[in-house]
Image (tube, rainbow, N blue to C red; front, side, top):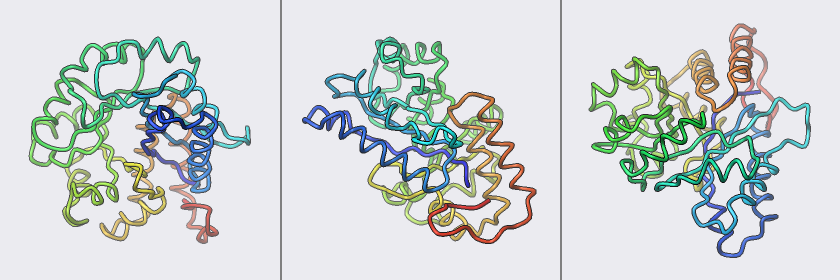
Length: 283
């Protein structure tokens, strides 16, 4: 069993605007949940784009219902993160109307004007939600730090910004990396050039996600395997990485600490035989 932070981005709301039925949205999200659980996921996070949904409340309700495990005893938690590409002051009220408690954060997308998001960002912070910014290089990274965030997605250019690195270290702000997706998007040319190892060596809290963006269908198991193979990381380093994933997760503190404790128990457990195919990483 494994603990992870996954961020596949679904633009199902846009497809709703083109006539996709809510039942089909629910089926697609349920398929994501099934794939996560087959991969040994304890906590999954789904970024949802509601910009063109004709009924965002109904869309949120359908996605939330589909993420619920059919097995109530399963050690499973999840969160919905709403994609933001512009100001949306009505969002907290919309979520309250939907009565969906699994909405726990927002993601400022790459096409978002970060300066224009400031008022919405303040409302999000007051709601107690996770604030996440997708920023890779240059001035946008500096804008992200001015705006303030709880988690950074990307950040390939951080190694050229020593002041920002120092700020990340001082405040233990996590940087979420999805190496396979970043390579597919050509944000980095090769595994050797990917900043994961250098950011980790620089003392930055790095976490690994899978499935970002949606066309990259890597599971976390596959992502960790690739990290281990290309960066020559040992099992202990992967366990540490997963502990950081749990600490950065958009879940209640008691659940977060519970996952971290479970990983610590795995850390001190004797090495077990490899898990059967389909069971994910056995730690």
